[in-house]
Length: 436
Image (cartoon, rainbow, N blue to C red):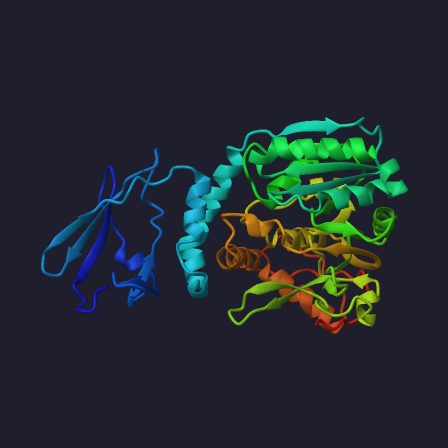
């Protein structure tokens, strides 16, 4: 609060060298502060800033900040000891700016550099996961089903029962669960062991030694996979009937250059959750992910036509395991979970493959049952960062891709993310789809 404009500079001191002037770096946003009286607040200005050149070597756990006033008075502030671990720093960064006030400048100049550094450190320091096996290992599985788990296990019994009742799944698929909340390892291992005894279905539990997020968990599970086809499935996705997996695998076709396929996903009331994924800019120009026909009845005609789509959701995506490995799997730069599935779809297209939506396979998806339990996940901050990151990487390519779908011109094969326009290579003839 500086109604009389007394503030001259804010200096951040460091162990050596000149202090860092912070005032020009501040990103400001409105806040309400308590007055000390019950329930009453007053208007103030919140601020955040990033000093990329501040610390080198060992982290500074108790930085010293000097406030200089125009009168010549100086005030020295020392905060409590600050965290050194990347996960806590990331959580604090995500909570630093209210999501409704996040701008592109705040993301690019203040939040994104911190999150990128945290994600990189978490990747580099992540311990190897442990692996437990329940039942015999399948000699030559045709498919590997990788399912990340995080704190919500309500649907495991139903999901495993559905898999175990599917003859093709039992004979040809290996089941790999990846636990991303290691504090629950004993509980989940006991549950999976009991389900194996009840149904006789072999499975593996890959337990992360530290929470890494959706991308890291899926990638860790894929490293254990041995099937030719890889199915990445959420823990809250429940098959409606048998034979769903071979039907989806059958849509993959190297000659037709189909590199990934996704099914129709339904809410528990039978309405559509997913019938393919598309991109649309918001009012700020950021590309957001949307699902075709979301909320319409599952029987809605246009949602029951098999067709090429810009992408499919990571809640259930099937692709050749070799292609997933070649593309480097999910990009772990995306925070917590969001937009890494569309990023993977864009990499599939950049490799010259198309993506198909297959409504002949329908599954229930009880959406976002796990991610809401993440203490680091703030729908606004993390999701806005991920949308910004996707747009920064793929802006021109998404623009060309959506133009192709809107005008039924040739499907673009996306090059490496770059300012140059993508080369257009004819692969499919598009039928325009209306998004609801």
